[in-house]
Amino acid sequence: MSFTPPPPPVFTGEHYHIWVVKMKTYFQMHDLWNVIENDTEPPPLRANPTIAQMRQHSEECSKKHKAMACFRNGVLDVIFPRIMACDSPKQAWEKLNEEFMGSDKTRQQQMINLRRDFENLMMKESETIKQYSDRIIATVNSIRLLGVDFSESRVVEKVITTLLEKFKSKISSLEESRDLSVISLFELINFLYAPEQMRANRQEEHPVGAFQAKANEGSGSN
Image (tube, rainbow, N blue to C red; front, side):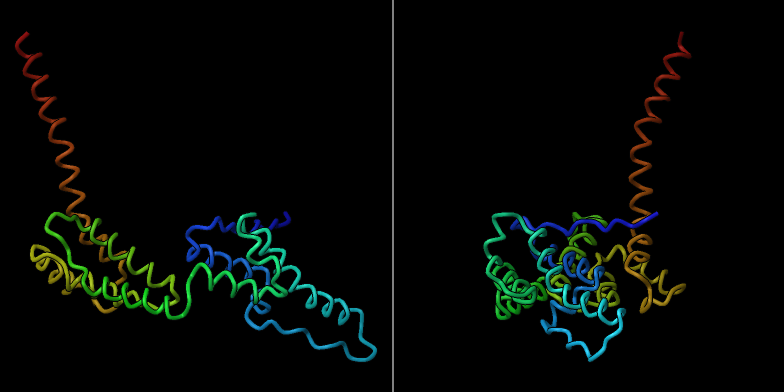
């Protein structure tokens, strides 16, 4: 069965930071990312090339055109005029980055703001573990989309050190059986979330049990 490659992700003018990650993966899948990064022409053929060398050279020369075709198919018509005059895929990539992701200075400020948001995160009394972890993950993902390497161990440490006091005993219990420096965020959240889920399930079951008891009383009096 032959593999039909999917079409490129389409940029609609919104959520550029997500599209650009998907588009980079798309270029890499098609072995086109090098022409985005380097914008260099392949070296000329040597004298008396073989058929295989000629074919390889032709494929390398066509990569820029393929990458530009991906760009043109990967943006809506309202976005296309912005890259229409670009002579190379690298130029198109940089043009879109500059307009929709901002300058290096803008991204640096975004990064500073997001790091500050991350450092200031604290669990609220009204929050469940899932709600709090979702807030942390959303902030971390925003930081990572700016190209920052944000380790999972740092996120785990943030969760552990900012939980409400009522979770401290569970963390101590977990620490006795696991090395918290290597535990994954998924494992930690599941460990903390399980009791909450059990309580929620019991609360859902309680009205059902009460209804059944009442029904049994009614049937017994007949």
